[in-house]
Image: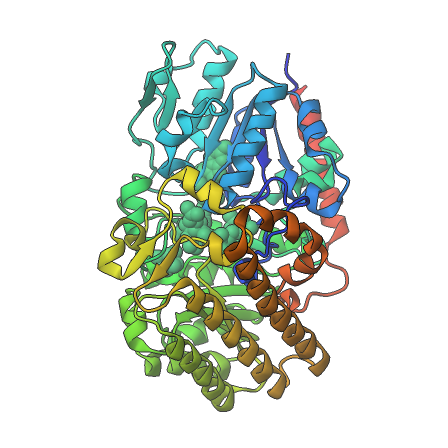
Length: 577
Ligand code: B12
Ligand code: SF4
């Protein structure tokens, strides 16, 4: 009998990244992960929680983190040693198209009889291509797979009340004759109250399985234990390149409108996280998406939580609302993504507010006491030219001169590596001014092992070629870095290091271009000689990761709470026996 009903595996973006010389570029500069995208989906947490509550035994193995932390870690040996009734592999983010498929191949090699289940946003989009591959046995589609996965595991266990495959919602599978079938996405619950982001269960699993590193959400999480509070699945907005927009949810994930978690439960989650960690909690999704009453109920329920709470705004907010946030959460931080300084570019991206309205929000947020205000910009947008990107940096200067008391931090990064499948730009590229270089899963898988991010990009726009997107990104990164040093947002030595890294990355892009022009076949071999240098500019290209982090106290975890959680887990097990 298998020890685990399901083991969830998270792959690195490119499986053999430790052997390959790839200039990934600034594709992950503004998220906690490295370019290997080692962070697993939050869904692993809700899935394991739900399945364990239903009496199933689960385990998470973050192979990407293990491979990153230990260069000698043998992923294949680890896979061979695992014991499970089924394996679950996320192909949630498309940049995992290479790693996820390679991990599946290794699992099939070592466990030929064990079913492999794929899931996540990209799996849902490419389910037909996936089920045609010998490594994949099932795809569970949609944004809410907890119950369909439970039903599938019941079927695989041969439980008496199990439903046949044809009756499991959201499931793509092959029948006995090998024909592919895709059941409709009929499981898409209206509320999120049946799932929990219960990190306490993860702590218990860590202690039970005695392997902390398998469960780490990303490589440096123990130093910066940021956690997420989930308000919804779905989105009410229509940003043109986003695979999580209202349009993509409707087309790919079978969701007509967002599902919300009761605001009191979100508040409870935030408090539970703050009990054992002193890291910040990022409340995902603009609280106002479900109306002001939802936002206010959350604030009433969370009032007094003392830790850092990050609140994101998809559009300008009123001073009154900001005051309410400040009253409830003394240590709040605000994040806004303006994308561009140019309202025309923002409009082409389907965001319709004015600069004046957002600047008023910034002024108010700072006035009522937000601890930090992060403002995000992007390159690779519709209607955006090289000159417009430079204009964005001029605008960042304007913001710093006007509101710069050290709390406002501008960031810029490219839309990379891919325009999301299912997004408006991916589905109607011409209408939105995009030219796509890849459409299928296989085409994306192959692009991921190209020698530099310029060749990995799956798009260019009517306004900027790939070369211009790359050049504009580096130039903007360099200018913004200098601006931050000038405004003492970062120390001079750190700014100098970042500047040198960007300069070297630009040179390496030139070297790779030359090798590709001369002989693409030889480029791979020649680039291996440059691997140490390429790796040295791969992380934090346009800004240091630490610039993203909020200050966290030295004692990052409340060990007494961790111990109590473990003891509660042990008691629960004891009373169940
Ligand atoms: C929050 C968020 C993040 C957080 C990370 C959260 C996390 N760890 O999951 C941050 C900010 C770090 C992030 C980073 C990135 N993100 Co993001 N993110 C989102 C956002 C806004 C919400 C996601 C969410 O709340 N999910 C809800 C949770 C509960 O469910 P879930 O994790 O999706 O899991 C459920 C299902 O997907 C499925 N499932 C998932 N995995 C598996 C595996 C198996 C086996 C099964 C059966 C089911 C299954 O079942 C789960 C439970 O029901 C979405 C946009 C949106 N509106 O959805 C974009 C989105 C998911 N992100 C996206 C992208 C592109 C990225 C980045 C690649 C961007 C970049 N270049 O840096 C990185 C990748 C980071 C990494 N892996 O290291 C795209 C993905 C498009 C695509 N198809 O590839 C989206 C859709 C939109 C966008 N552009 O931002 N992201
Ligand atoms: S980028 Fe736009 S569409 Fe996508 S999740 Fe954020 S607000 Fe929604």
